[in-house]
Length: 278
Image (cartoon, rainbow, N blue to C red; front, side, top):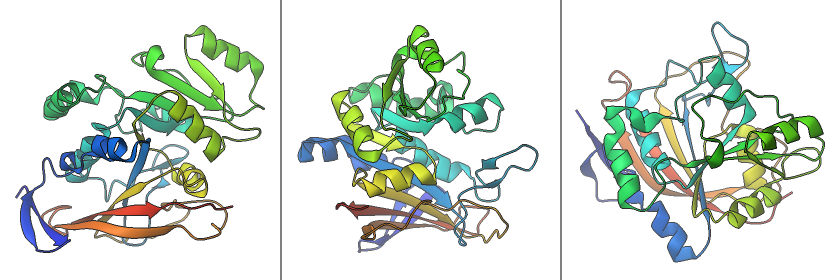
């Protein structure tokens, strides 16, 4: 079935899966607040795994035991509302190796034609800009990537030759920190480019950077009803202790009883109560 059950807020209600996150009106969130709205999305196992070692290549990947088309549909509904998507040099390396989820040409898939229409109807560019965070600049450039919609944010210690090479490719490259990209600098860079809505489709270290700077406003979290175990693994956030802790307030919770081969999964969203941290 293509329906889910709203558990919170009450009253409980059966709702269609398709279009669920399009109703979030993230552009409206930005307009009402008069500032950029940053949001992120993860899928996790019950034991907190968002990434595990790739079965045949070096590095980590989304666990295939929890990846599923119903969650992927909702991720795409969030991306459809983004002026820009934050990713990393690692994503481009994984893309070149054929092990990354497709975000560069997704609207060419007929299954997501309605999302392409949504972007046009709501005044978005055909594709979101891509903001690539990379301290080392050690990534390839996919042929299908439009250089004009790409921004690379790097650290002052990055190699001058690589920065020059990216600029020669027509790619905007800016410094966002000394040794690594810093959250406050990143926020300023994004705001200066006029982005209204930004999806952080990146790993747990970037989420930590954004949380520490108070630069992210909402978390969308799918929790798949499977326990994976295994080491090493990545969880939602990775980095030093957040002081004070990041406070989140539940905004919505849905049960997808038919997802994941009938095991089920939950779709939750949380408002992040931003404040200064270190």
